[in-house]
Amino acid sequence: MTFLDKNFPIESPDTVLLFEELSLWSSYFGKILLDHVPLRKDMAVLDVGCGAGFPLYELANRLDATCQLTGLDPWEAGVERAKWKLAHHQLLPKVEVLLGDAAKLPFPDKQFDLITCNLGINNFDDPAAVVKECYRTMKRDGRLCLTTNVEGHFREFYSVYETVLKELGMEELLPTLKASEQRRGTDETVRDLLEDARFNVVKIIRDKFTLRYLNGSAFFHHFLTVIGFLPGFRSIVPKREEERVFSLLEKRLNEQADWDGELKMTVPMLYVEAVR
Ligand SMILES: C[S@@+](CC[C@H](N)C(=O)[O-])C[C@H]1O[C@@H](n2cnc3c(N)ncnc32)[C@H](O)[C@@H]1O
Image (cartoon, rainbow, N blue to C red; front, side):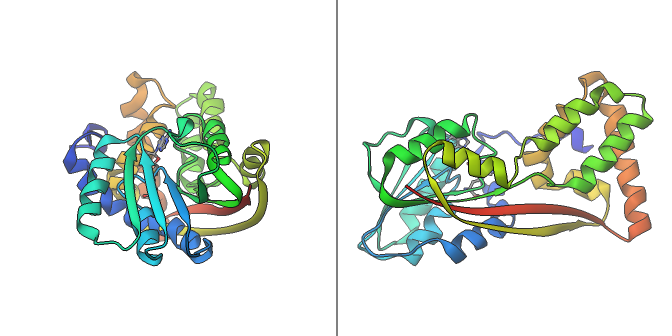
């Protein structure tokens, strides 16, 4: 089976179990968030895009019985899993998990002291609508604390992808590739997103990490690549060209790994804190 044949149905309970393996990916971002997020008594907290329960439960475990937390996500299998965890965590704060779209939050105005969002904004169909809703439902002086991966993400991969498209005479696809690479935004675009919703950005922390793979084959077969990134990589080329493009990409990445001793992917990330 090649990585192009792999399929992880997003609504399958088994995929959710595997999704928990993403905690290593989520944890790089979650660590900065948990290092900086304000922890106080009497907080009402909302975690938007809580997935299967991160950082919702980690935060709940770090707070006390004076706090209340809500997690919200439209991913049914994720929310189901998060609810299962709720039944098993024996937490002190009151916690609830809701199925929903953060672009239409089911809460009255000025409810929350803290809204967290780990790795959400690149996944929302309408991030501006979500940020606006966060502003509406946040108390005065409340904080929005988010993390995200930004432009430069997997730059090593995109550079080889560009070379491969040129090698195959598919230069007409280069603007699509560029647009896909740049859709993750920058410090400035994330700041603008928050300021456009009238938030006051008070802290930005930049960091980066490197994911290491044996070679391109390992990179393409990795669960995280298949579930999180391959659909975006595939959307660059017409279906009829997929085999040709991806077999050459795999070959070129493998050659590079042979040359360098391993394959490295850089992931630049941001922690942003904003006040209402
Ligand atoms: C990369 S995952 C991050 C999940 C979790 N916060 C973590 O750190 O592991 C992005 C999450 O955003 C959720 N999401 C996508 N669109 C959303 C929306 N409109 N409102 C709320 N969550 C959304 C997805 O279902 C997914 O669970």
